Image (cartoon, rainbow, N blue to C red; front, side, top):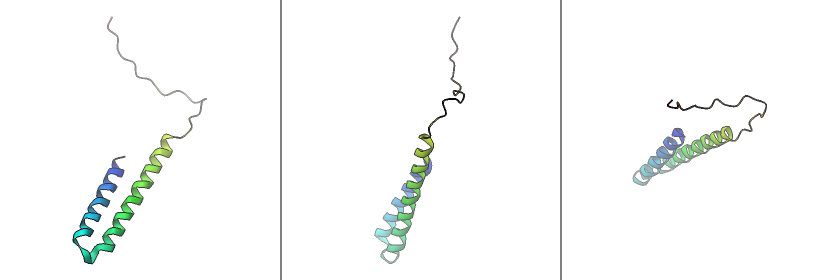
Amino acid sequence: MENVRRYRALASLCRQQAAYRPLQNWELLGQAEHFEYLAEVELKAHFDACNVPHDEGAAAPATWETPVAA
């Protein structure tokens, strides 16, 4: 998820620079669109990984036990 934040921040910076650099406007807006695309790809990969159906026959993940005072 950190990559998503970075890609979105870079896209925002590109759009800000495009406002102040009219000669490079289209190039910077293209870069911003590319960074937004990368953020979407990263988000999709994250949610696909989170929504994988778990095998019910597989071992359950280890649970943390809290120490109990005697």
